[in-house]
Length: 397
Image 1 (cartoon, rainbow, N blue to C red):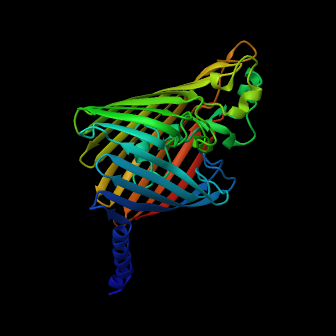
Image 2 (cartoon, rainbow, N blue to C red):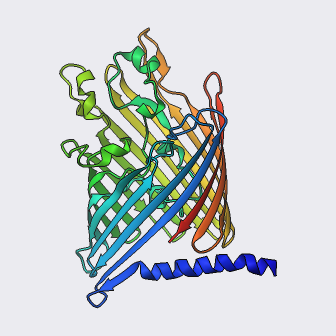
Image 3 (cartoon, helix red, strand yellow):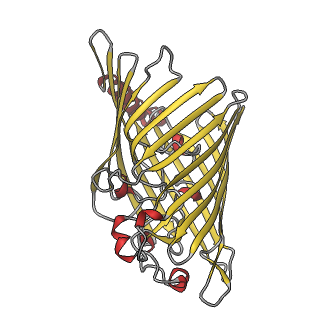
């Protein structure tokens, strides 16, 4: 009797969310225009025993992060598709800042041919590189955070050029958030892209206004114009339904324009570029899913030269039941060496690894809960380590 009483509110909530799906879908012109509003409500909690990892921006030991994501999808006939995403939260990356609102995506996609093999897209949208970005939203990501390449800060900063080699190696900014990662999340930069499917081959190319490592505010066209675009692309191969293999590449300016006053005479901030080569793998078999990505990056740094970086992760997910899954992920980051002022060479950052495990429960068709543990440790002298425990509750509508 007691279990029936407890289950009643859950059933009623599910029925209400099912009805909400119908209310948020609108058709017109004899169903030639079909528009749907959907969304995610996320509540995350983090506990740290030392400095927060990645791009988490807080000085507290515990951080609570609420987030509302709304997505609009509109199909206009068979050739035109429009989509938009807006978020209300306390910052693009988890942090304890004040509430803010952003339009993350707004783009139109055209499929001009008789089939859907060719598509053209214009607007502000996620990058085409790699295989994590298409599954980065909380409902699709087995983990609460992003893999290491998409959130681990390097020892490189984009607001000013280093004064010398020694300044680059030993004189970092005061705040961690002044650094940049190899790839900043899904990179919702502004521009255009083209995609083409030819049998088992998928080809995508884009021209955007900001590099893969650029910070979120740089993705807006009003902040970063289109004078110095970034070029990225991916070639994918699907030998059979189980496998998805890909190679990505990108080249773009990683400095902000405000760095110009610190650039060496005779050079411009856009002369210094981030170059990325990436490989990705996806595999699905019965209850198993496997993903892996590796990125080799090179940053051209004033007074220093080439600063190389290797980042990769391997991720596996196993579904015990339709509603319960577990996932593990291994990440590593390796910095190359650069010349110092004494005639030798030094690593320009701290090598590290991160091991993560997550357990997820699909409570209903509209709700999900995940809990995650992460251990991160540097492999250089000192072997500094940090532990993070996180939980996330999501409602999808």
